[in-house]
Length: 291
Image (tube, rainbow, N blue to C red; front, side, top):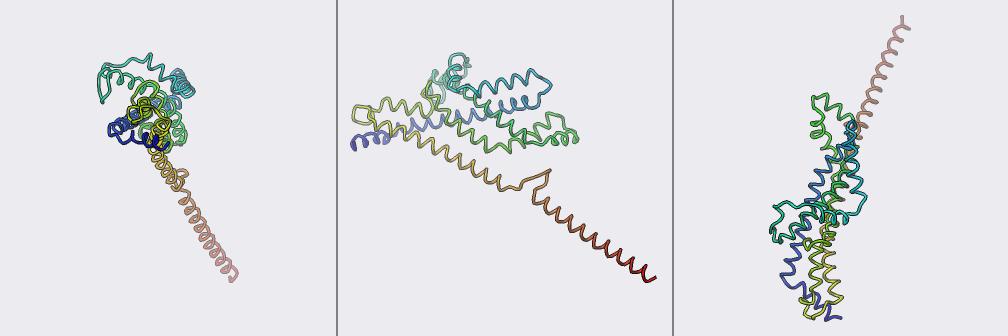
């Protein structure tokens, strides 16, 4: 057993194996970041249409249908649908990024599926942020001469995004894990490359056969890489949430602490006015009695 385990670990001593795996990590991060970035763009439009296009029933219905259909169906289903039906532009039909023309086509189609799926989830996240923006912000914007589009871009969306940044980072973590579904269609990202090495482990472990320990070593390495990436992002999310929790809560533009100070000042002012009025009344009564 010890010899077999050492043979399995010897696979990781080869530089070519590490280069192959690290390229898979790079593609995993690239696909995930691209899916989230475009998902935020598409999701923002969908959230705005679903929330504020109350007069245009058709657009609102289409946005709602898009969000609900993609959110309530499996990602793997859309990967296979895009693999079959999604056309690929000529720019992705050639060798690039060290991939063959076939792999670039598969990468494009799988990325489209991931973007469509992720955008529907992000749309609901952003819609939650939009709902947290007070309605008075629109009135304030109109009073300053902004039109509706300018209010959305300069006033509403910045506040909405600020409130959902931790949730968006959590979605990045989910998207990185979801990218492993691409291993079912192409040897591009991390999990697919680990599976490819696993299928030819007998060529690298020196035993001539694929051992059970090879499974634990190779997939354990993949799990460790996923954990390192996602745990780092989780720490960032928790730090941001703690920072938000420690930040002063605002009500009507003022912090709660400021409002308490104002209230104390108001009471002190009332007490001073009351004391002065009382003193004035007492003086007037004294003068009247002396007369």
